[in-house]
Length: 185
Image 1: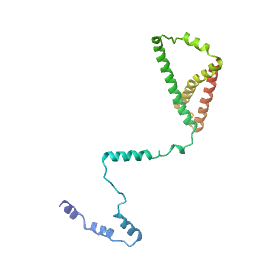
Image 2: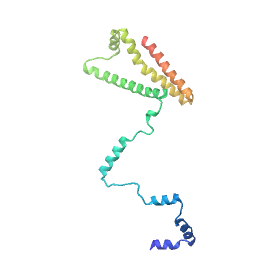
Image 3: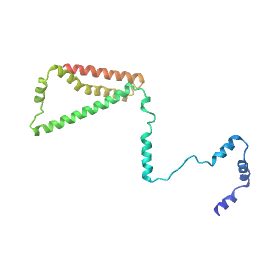
Image 4: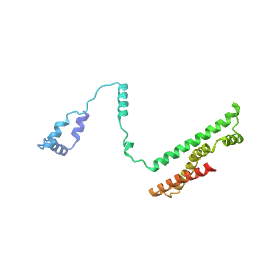
């Protein structure tokens, strides 16, 4: 009943214009389109919710990353960003381990005071001490110089591609030189 009322309320001009659209056309394109209108290209199948989730998880496992990471050429900025994060984690982890050891050592009967650590370091031969000091100081110096690089960027300086690479190489060179100096001191 509602459909009939709506149908009668439309103007007669509407039916004339739509009747022209409904007339069959002799063109090849429209006949091929009409032939495929009623074909169903998607086949559905009944499955439980668990089966559907399982199939979806399987499809997601086989789906490649888009865009795939292998199409990108590695850049200096990638490496420096990763190294900055890694050195931050190493420094924080070292601090937490030493602080925990400092607190637990007296309970185990050991002492980690300055005098004990200094006497232990003096007993180590120089051929082990110098590379060890470099390995210990490099994460700290790199993290400091790369952090200064980020602070320079915060002032909106050196944000061009050339400036980013210039500051990146400067952070690498300064951290190697500073760590080398600290290793031999």
